[in-house]
Length: 318
Image 1 (cartoon, rainbow, N blue to C red):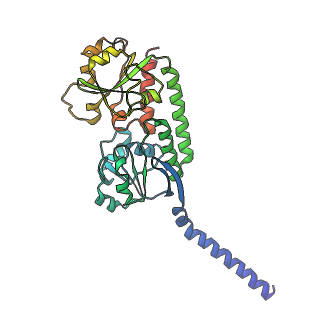
Image 2: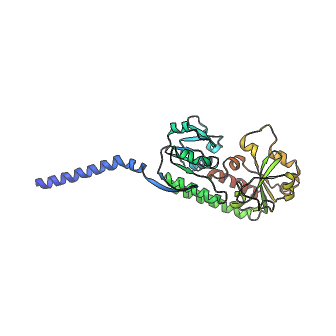
Image 3: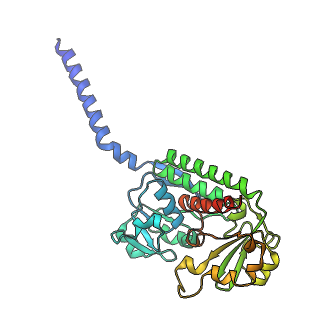
């Protein structure tokens, strides 16, 4: 082989080796620096893809992450349901509460991304000073759209888009099955019960998903309620409204407080509520209090559990 050809071949091989070495050493770094545009409650944000460390102050987001097999690095101190029991482990850093971030604890974790929402949504600007932050708050006037947005956002950030799409398809199918049943069920009322006191909720409210997503017809007494306020109802008011279905969230059971006091079921069914059509027809449903009151029925797992419970109650009346 001629010297010139040998030199050319040697240079070509050297360039190829350098290119392979560069791709090998910089590929992961480049991937880590990739930015993705995602939707959240505050609009559109550009976030580093696949962040190594995340701090989560929003339980529905933690629910969605768990469903998509995404591990949080640090969480707000809370009482976790069984499906999130892994976060009860002491080795997982706590970075404050759902209401108040702990800045020192966050600094020790040094998260690449922080999630807020619900009770922590007001702290967005506060924690944004520490690390990139997304607000996963749910719009009560469009809850399902918010949930879909949040799941798709997680899928895009963590390269779980196929899993997110599959999870949402399953959720949509479950909702449609439930709506086909609820359309024939008569009218309904959702209340938050605290002993012998209650608040009622209509469409577009904090617990309006029972109507807006699950398809129940709101009882006449709640269909025009303001969506921004809690509406105290006397038990006599509920009895007068006489809903076909009464859905009850037991606040004491949700928070784990006042365990020495009677449950909502004991109080309500020994009261005038026991004379309603819902009671007589065994159509009072004591929904999962944690899923509704703490998680807001806004995560993939909690929402599916709520659908399953209500669907089973409707099936029992066939």
